[in-house]
Image 1 (cartoon, rainbow, N blue to C red):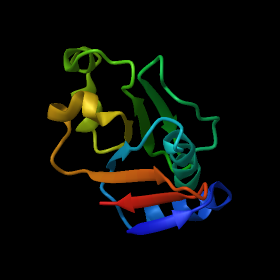
Image 2: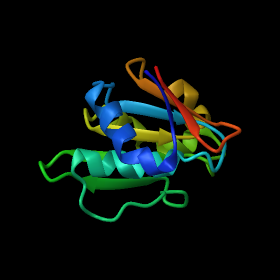
Image 3: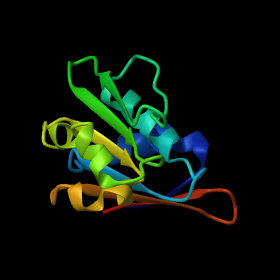
Image 4: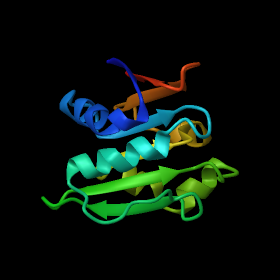
Length: 135
């Protein structure tokens, strides 16, 4: 899937991503400020999360419940110094739980990522739009 969009189209983009039936573990790649967290917030809404969502930059993971009782985990490993920190927090339990796992800065835990996952690459284009590639 390849989509070029502006931020005011983020709801439609999130709906298209979920409708494409991605793996439940999704890695989000892109430069800081490109809109990874914004997209993840909208994906959470699309899945039925009604609570406020925010970036887990300092807590490493936020947990949300959807209206149909699914669990969504949002990880931000930007501040992680070594993979062992992720292991210490029990990242394996999250990743193999069968729940949605949205992961920012996954390269910090590259060897821990399950083989079965999807990847979203987001790039900021010169006109201010974003290009999303779902692999």
